[in-house]
Structures are given as structure tokens and as C-alpha cells.
Length: 155
Image (cartoon, rainbow, N blue to C red; front, side):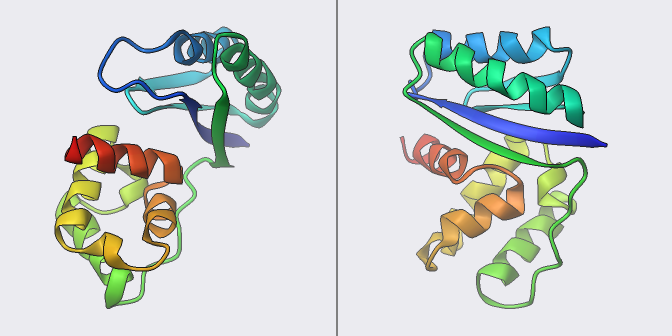
């Protein structure tokens, strides 16, 4: 069984070079032989369940040892697809953006997830109660990642 995970280390530092806590965590994941995608707002990793779960302790430890004061982590079964959204409201907006961007929001590359957040914001999706959490679930990222995408667009 394979798992996907995404982690974000803080403090977050805008557009500069990645902080040591982020690169150290990435190197710990790579050393475990995991598939890694390092992005400006978080790192995605995937691998066999036993390998990924064992490596997570090293990833978190490396981040903390190199200056992180918080690590946000999400783990799920590889290829997990959330239930189909109901029409209308926030769910309707998510379905609309998913259709425009080619389908499953979770399967989008990071740049398209950022675009999805921008489109959702333009359409008022973040006016709904608990919308960052709902959008994060739909995209398969953490709530913190959604906030980073929003701040990036506003900044």
C-alpha cells in the first residue's frame, strides 16, 4: 500500500531561498528513498506505507533541528479521491473550478492548485464559513498551504 503525504515547515519566508528547516526535511525524505516534490509552500512525498511512515519521524526531526517551530503534516492513501461535490454553494464553485482545470483538484500540479485557489477567491469561495478547510480537503493539501496560496496572490 502506498501513501501520499504533504508537509509544510514554519516559519514561512516568502520568496527568498528555502529556509534550512525546509531543505533539511526534504533531504530526510529523499534519504529514505521517497518520491519528493519540493515546492515554495510545502513538500509532497509518496512511497510505500512502511517506508513513508518510518521516514516521517526523521523528516519532522530534521525540520525541528534546523529551525522549524512548527511542522504541518497530512497523510492519505495514494490516489484517494474525495466524494463528488453537491451542486451549489462552495461545493458548486469547487466543481466548477475542477471542470475548468481538467477534473480532480487533488491530481493537479502545484501551479494549477495555486490557480484553483486564485479562481475560487475571485468567485467568492472564501466568503463561506470554514472554506479554507473545505478547499484544502478538495485540493488534497493542508489549510496552511491554502492560506499561503492566498497570501501569495494578495502579496
